Amino acid sequence: MNQRSTIPTKLTSSLQELSLRSNKALVGSIPAELGQLRNLQVLSLAQNDLRGDIPEVLGDLQMLEHLDLSYNMLSGKLPPMLGQLPRLSILDFSGNALQGSIPASFSSLKSLQKLDLSSNQLKGTIPMELGNLANLQFLALSQNGFVGPLPSSLEKLSNLQYFLLDSNPIHGSLPSYISRWTQLRELNLANSYYAGPIPADLGKTLFNVSVINLSNNKLQGTIPPSLENMQHISYLNLSQNLLTGAVPFSERFLQKLGNRLDLHGNPALCIDAASISFSDALLAQQIHPCGSNNKPGQLAAQHLHQGSPSTVSNSARAGVPPSLGFTLTYSLRVLYFLLAYGLFLVFLPY
Image (cartoon, rainbow, N blue to C red; front, side, top):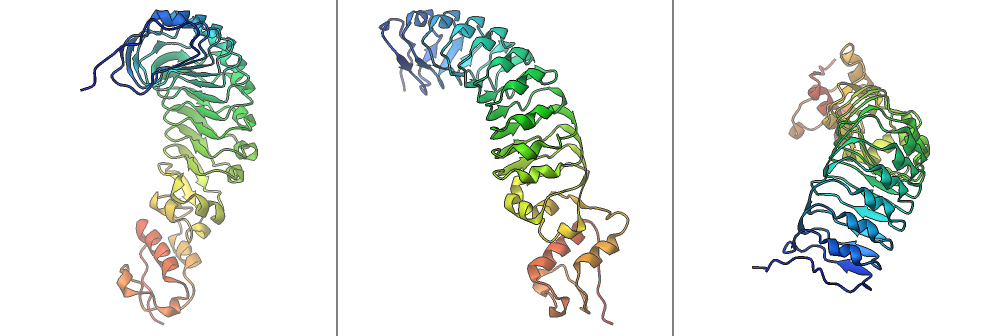
């Protein structure tokens, strides 16, 4: 059994890096004596069993560049004095039990590139002052209790690459300025209360984005065709919204994403009849055919070549009559589609 220990309080003042991460035997609180290490540049105490408040005296570490206290059991509020660290580039407090709001003083962290406060118990609105962090590349506030719309000041974060704000009760529309974050690689706003349309030009400028997750919101309107312009997209989740109209994506785009495209849970979303031959993933998500409620016979006619087969069976062992004029794979896709929506066809000989 590992012997439990605490962070030592007597350390040399010339120390530049203190890394005690990933040691569940490290318990207790963060000692205020660490505020005397005026030459400290890196303080990493992540993934331990530390508890209590974050000492305000850490704001005295003027040389500090990297502060990682993630995945402990820290509680209390974020110390406003941490906004006095001019060289700080990484601040990671994720995976704790921190409460309160984000101090406005954090806007003074002009060198900050990464701010991760996800998986805490923070509340309130997102401060307008965060828009002053011009060098910010990574902003993660997921799984907290933030409310209100996204502040307009975030538009100024032109270097942002990761914007992770999922699982917060935030409402309002998706701001159009997201499309001006041209360096963006990942956007996650899932599990919130966003309403209104997806910005029409979202895919026209986000050439570097690989992951977009807007699932489980109240988004309305049609899917912007511009999303297909995102050349590096590898995961797109728009499920569980109120989207309408036809899925606008080409065969190439659908094949590229496959099951990494999630559109399920949009009852008014439909798939164009000409697309069912290559949209297996959408069929599995029960995206219904456009106009199928009114003219199912026309749908079948668009996909079954002319011929005089005797029957079409739902058993793969029965095979496909050669006179059907198309491949087994294609026919099974059509058959799956028809059965999924209750469209039963029987072909009789002339």
